[in-house]
Image (tube, rainbow, N blue to C red; front, side):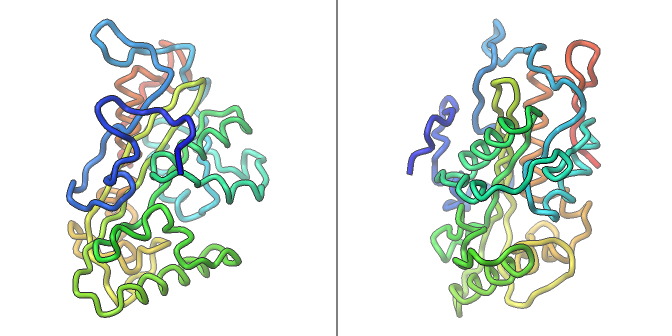
Length: 275
């Protein structure tokens, strides 16, 4: 399926295997995936567009996932933003939201969601898409991570449990448990679109460990931390997580482009998101 009008970064196809999560060899790093609508400085880089600066400190976080919102809020506040949830913004849940993630890459899905909610809110909007890529499963569940179990009737913790059950069933007695979490975080406002990406390597463990986190966290043991994401404290997970790296990469791109929270030269320089 095509990504209908998604911006293509120079020198790299945004729909590559690495972005889909089917390649696990690139390491835990963050990078710019794509951008659109930015002016070019004489040196060839993206120059500031003061008319596009965030009009105030509010930043809509386009997710219905309470766990994801809790994870993102400290980073965004540390960067100078006031995170606004969808409920707080008065955006009621719409059945159309279930059909937004139709791209073949995490970057594509993040952009589709950010655009959709930006159009409905008028606020600078951040959205992300993330998933688990398991080597023995050929990179699955990848962009289908949220829907891996096929249980469209479930939400929240019940859906997480069904997806984890499917993961362990599919792995069975497989000895190669290597996996990676991949995330693309996108921001859209004033015609400008930026995307940052991050990933973290780990292995899938059979036993459910830890009471923190959400999604596949109880079964994903981080190579860097030596514990599952569900066992890690928030600050530990944020330091190495795919989502934390993606958001910090995105904030770096915004900062390099000269964006300020509050707009114009008097606005606050965007921080690095270190909570």
